[in-house]
Image (cartoon, rainbow, N blue to C red; front, side, top):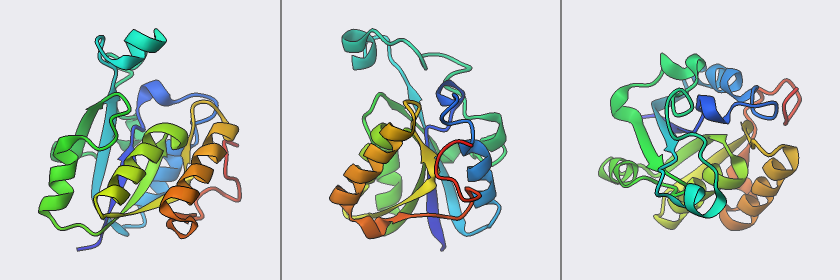
Length: 176
């Protein structure tokens, strides 16, 4: 079996001026056929969750914000899409999925590098699964500084050699 690709929260509600380039890059990565299975998470902001309660942020609570972006829909099999409330990192169902299959390493791409990508990568690391973050297929809705901050924290916590580039950014790390 080839290595899984985990696409973190590349959904309509997280596409903005800083992240608009990510769907196309992820599609290019998938089309290389180097990854199997293709796994997805999607963030669903619960009205009783911490984002609403503590931060007063109510985005990504309903469709279309919670939908995967159109460019990736054709790659998403329902049994490989895992919903998560908030910044919880690895949903229980996804943790069970990777453990049941004795997966040892997962490549990670997605949105937000400084939040959900970081949390999931660190969760995988904590349960003994090697996370490989593909930096040119990640971005932050808060911009380049937040993306770079996420990469810096990841470098320290999971190791710099686990941050890779796929070469799908046409020489740019951030949004063109």
